[in-house]
Amino acid sequence: MSPQTAPVIRLLSPGQKMKGQDSLFFQRLFWGALAGCLAAIVLAQSPFLESLELSMLKWRYRVSDQLAGLSAALPASKEVTIVTFDDSSQFDLGIARFNDQRSQGILSEALAAIEKGQPAVVVIDLDLRGATNEALTRLFSRYRNVVLGLFGSLEGSTDLPAAEFMTHAASYGYSELARESNGIVYRLPVTCEGKAGPEESGLAPVPSLTEAVMEVYRRVKGVGSPSQFLSARKDQPIYINFKRQAYPKVSLKDVLSPDFDPGRFKDRIVLIGCAFTFRRDDPLRCKTPLADSQPEVLVQAQAISTLLSDRAIYSFAGGIARHFLIFLGAICGAFSSALPLSTRTAFFLLGTLILLVVAQVSFQAFCLAVPIVPSLTVLFACFILGTVIFLDTDLRQRNKELAAARESMQVRAEEERRRIAEDLHDETLPALSAVARMADRLATDLSGNPVPGQMRERLDSAVSEMRRVINDLHPSVLETMGFVPALENLLNICSREGGIEGRFVDGVGNHECELNWFTKLQLYRIVQESLNNVQKHAGAATVQLTIKEADGSLLISVADDGKGIDPRLVRRDSHGLINIRQRAQLIGARVEWRKPADFSSGTEVRLEIRTEKS
Image (cartoon, rainbow, N blue to C red; front, side, top):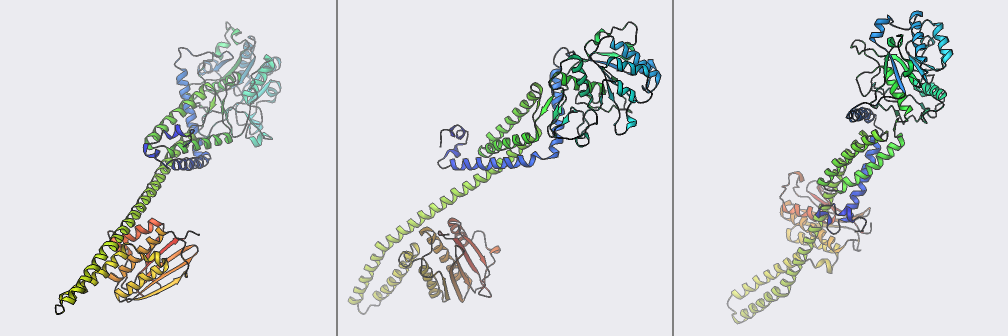
């Protein structure tokens, strides 16, 4: 373990700090990081997450507004004043729309009163489509600080006001702001980079109202915000900063009163627009994150204030956001895969909390919209994938440890069998041979007594049985004769003792197979158990043992023409078959029972194992 990984290793559970676990730890880090990257790549392109991110953006606006509302008083705008044409003005002045000579004449009187206060810019965000009042036109030409906010879609020339208004006004712009798919006004109507014309960009064929206002403001004041002409990538929206702010409001009716003081408009941007009360049967078009509906003039005031204070909400470009998510996925995936469940859950909850706090602080203090929904989704996906990887690698490690334990047990069992076989060979067999010689002497001394001869026969049988047991405990034939001849010897024993015709098909020749001693011993035991089953249970007349090599694998099959078995009906606690399966798993061999190809009935046990040279 390197010193650099020691702090991380200390976070692991005690079971993971065992010798040899470092490799498992780094495997989990690798697979977790890879899974996290793939999850981030898949989720980064999801349009569903983009729509959820807009809802989360609205939530951030509301949180920011609630936090700002904790202060005692709202800050008043120092640049923008709103002249409202509200329900009271509409009733008292008897004006519904400014599309006739009388209503436009009243507007010209109000505009003349406002201009006495020497405002920087006057924005008329009213519907002027219809008759053109010459007095109003002369005011536009005289002061040259008037910006027209045009209602309508601008798709046809009939939606434009009279040409005289456009000719004499300082500037005019499209009054609608860009809307998101959920209908809420978020984006500033800025120009997209790399677009040749308005048809391609999807924007209005004239500057946006906010851009037109800033253009006149800079010309009149001589200075302007550095972000007055914003240019944004198509995949990097720039949002209005809907900060809590009070805009001074004056009714259009009050502007027309004789004792009105126009000095309050000095050097300010004056917005003249509608401020009707909300009516269910005629809802206003513009919705903001801070209210169900807002007059459009207030939304325009927020957009202009955002540009004036250079406090637009910037978002990450699509490419940067994707790289950020991939990096986040790699980090979270790696840690989720390497840490135990309790620590992983704590990191997930802590990471979620940190992400929410950082996103809100970035939004409110640094005007940066960090993507929350894709990040939380990647974090959750990494938690799930990390849990799966952790459990999978843990299961594989436990299986490997269990296989090593079984192998160790088999090795110790074989060593114990060898010791018992040597003890029987070195001590018990000589003792039985000595007793046999004593029986021979008794037979000579007691020539007429049949008992010594019977003792000799029994002893010879016991010695033969003892030699068979010794050979079963430790098959020395593997060492003396070799692997293939040892298997052939097993077939000969089965044929001789069971009265079964034995066929041996040797497809490997005289050379030894590329297998280690332990593997050969386990294969020998499997073949031995299979032949014992044929001898005891199959009722077969013929048994065939085949050994051959193909495609870097050693194939061994034991087939008989007996009554056969259905592997699905074999009892789960059948010790012989369980023993065969366990020995095959121990050496990485594949074993199966099937109907033999060379006989019309019976069973074939087929073994396949990769040789070391492959």
